[in-house]
Length: 83
Image (cartoon, rainbow, N blue to C red; front, side, top):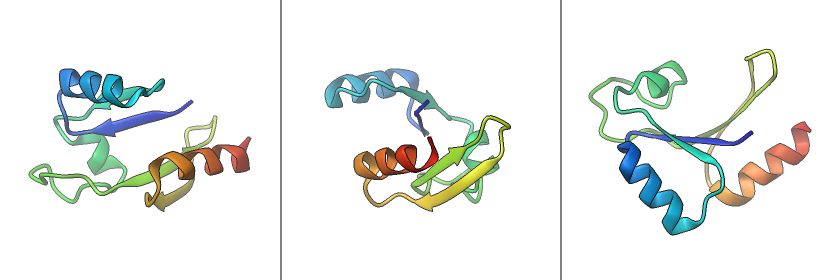
């Protein structure tokens, strides 16, 4: 399963997904709780999150975390490696 997370509102997420034809869910993290828990933000006042791609196993543990350089191709490569 692929999920995207950003600080944008749910409506902004929907508009972005429709514009780019995303078939996966985009989650709104307005409180920054997810970004703080995963180390993509240092404080709840951060304006932007760092871009990371995480592979999370069925047990909920992070298997791999890499800085996102190529959002489309990078996610596909990670999914192939971890299937």
